[in-house]
Length: 285
Image (cartoon, rainbow, N blue to C red; front, side, top):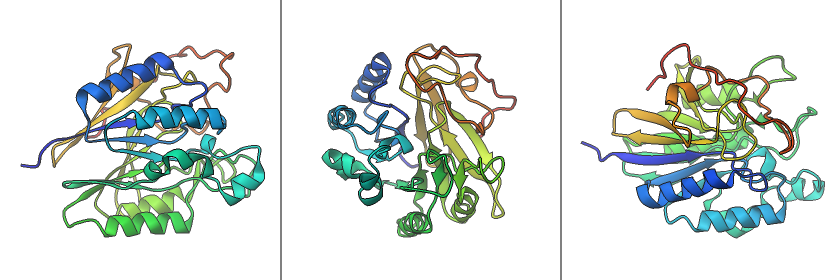
């Protein structure tokens, strides 16, 4: 029997507006539980400012476990357009070795898929876009895995195209999911919406499981700060949404990816939960 794997799935820490108590709690959990890997699915920073990246670098390098980080839309320079176009990940330099890092464990691998582009032909650049190059690189890495290895694909934006063409969350998300459905992919891990979810997304080639993590920042949406604890026994991937308020996992999960994924923008705006959205069906494991 395969040895159990323990993974922590974190997202949307937003250094600059991080929840310090929640972050200290997660750091203690990592030190005590020693997960096999930690996946951070984007938005490490609030405004991609150097002090925020310095805080993120210090925190990540203090963790003595394997870490992989996906960039999020908040991590790309928003105001200095030359940097955004020419070197969008340049501010990750101090810990570039963990950005989009593939982590291989016996029988299980974390494989990155970048959902950010420097610019796109719509006004809201915060939304996701899977480029052909990013998808090809992800598929190549999955195809190169040892036989029998299952993949967890790490992204920032959920691979969902909802609403009209102008309000779609992630362009080419359906294309990416259809390609991943043809490969040994356990699930796609994402962030961005600041609430946890665990849903099966239909594609023309079969379903793909999408797992979203909540936030560890002050920018909460409908649930308190949290992270996902994933356990894999070689047959079943189980998700527990860990939080300091001891709310059960089903009550921490939203039923679907919201079309409007924006939480309150600033610390001064109301951030208290406005009512958790309970699932109407049990999570799929």
